[in-house]
Length: 112
Length: 114
Image 1 (cartoon, helix red, strand yellow):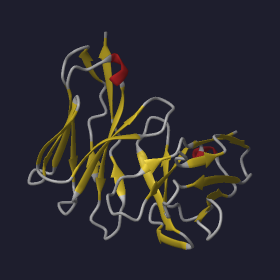
Image 2 (image 1 turned 180 degrees about the vertical axis):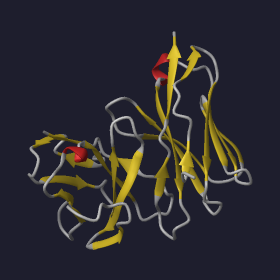
Image 3 (image 1 turned 60 degrees about the vertical axis):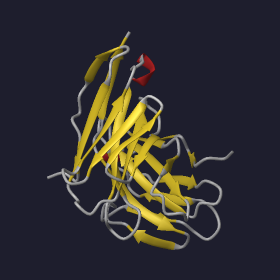
Image 4 (image 1 turned 135 degrees about the vertical axis):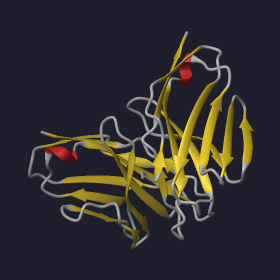
């Protein structure tokens, strides 16, 4: 089992729709979770962090965490073509120090 | 507002040569991570360093790869006797002493091995 799993996609949504990106992780002791956005040929950019169960909203983005199910998701409301990118889920493994393990990413395509 | 600085941005090497990638963390950050990203794949952890210390190198290949973060100067990722499979983007990320877990990435160094 991979430490962090994501569907590679592509996930295609029309402009204005809600995009839902999902991620599962294997280490039950993990405490912090992150979503990064990566445009083709660019570096990853942090867009959301979440540390406790429930929802966390920031503008059009909502991160959801369910530690019991070892599941974290990212919702993007009112999707825009500029949101088209690869979204990387990252989990801080319970190793005693900071160590982010990344999923392989989900490619999101938002069509005008 | 200096972020994480990596150089060179692009590096071309022939098989058997050495590649040296440099990373200067954000101002005030003393922890550096190196990740490798193969084409169409996710980021793979390689090594975590503090100044003058290697904290975790569990992701480093056993041979040809080494990393350092000296007291003065940038962190260096060194790849000896490069092979075509080393062609990838190598990203450096830094973190401050505050334990937020948030990594800030540089623009990456893209290594092409001919």
